[in-house]
Length: 384
Figure 1 (tube, one colour):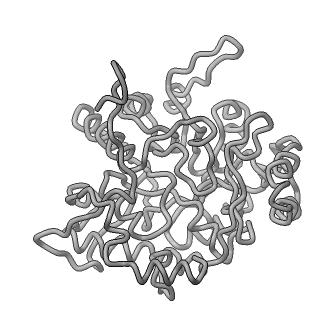
Figure 2: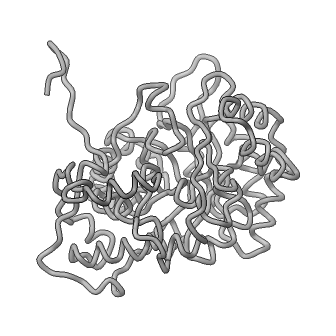
């Protein structure tokens, strides 16, 4: 469609704009297969915890591994800057609202200590966890070797926008394709939201692609930079790149939806749009075990020049086990996310995640509010 003379724009859709239509055949939810494979790693729950200091520390990595998921630690965050990161987290969560961003910038000012990064990885490994660490392209050349030597199982190369081709006259761009080819462990790369960028990442031998720019509850990238594609469309476009790459090469590169999901219904929609798994931040930061004490803030919030995030209060929903596997004690879809995904798959007649990619999707912005006036009024009255 045209937004003005000689200027085209296409319509894009988020999770709240769509709904899933049930299939003509249904499947027993208990017989659905929701496993996610990344390289040789197989996750019983197709869930990665986002690399945010309010969501992931060593105990969370251990517990999520036990639950069949994968926690990604921020390799450039508080865990690798402070011997006692709990004190740094306390400074952030106790800051008055008007001082949050400057306080976060101050707390993240001390330098990264490679010895602490290695220590955290070894602590998690010694406790039996599968360990994933997130690094930015700018610091990966220096820190990846530290993580690998310490025994990391998965590397995540992540920034607001990551592309294979990066132009700079000030520094040498990160050789992403060479890094992925030589890595002894799977390398997940993100973030992207377009078919073309995703296809180039896949051709660079990445092990999985993260999809999402600015959809997180804590992220202000869409407002600060004006960047972002609503998640339903972004996932579908990147999934198309995966399918075309698979048809051409025989290699399947998993697509992981990163951000914008709070309920089991959102997770099911992400999978139906084409995702093989999901990366969750807010949901898991609301676990009683999360280090953020009921708060979360994004990886870009601490940027000294142009922060793109803020601190958000998420409260406590339940344990990590209750959030992922249930049982649910709330009716709002925030607990038992895997159970919700399995039930949605069963209703859509999908026995596997690839089957769920064939589910019918309808444009239905009224699905959240249609005949739900009393629910909406009640939740508003309860302050929800």
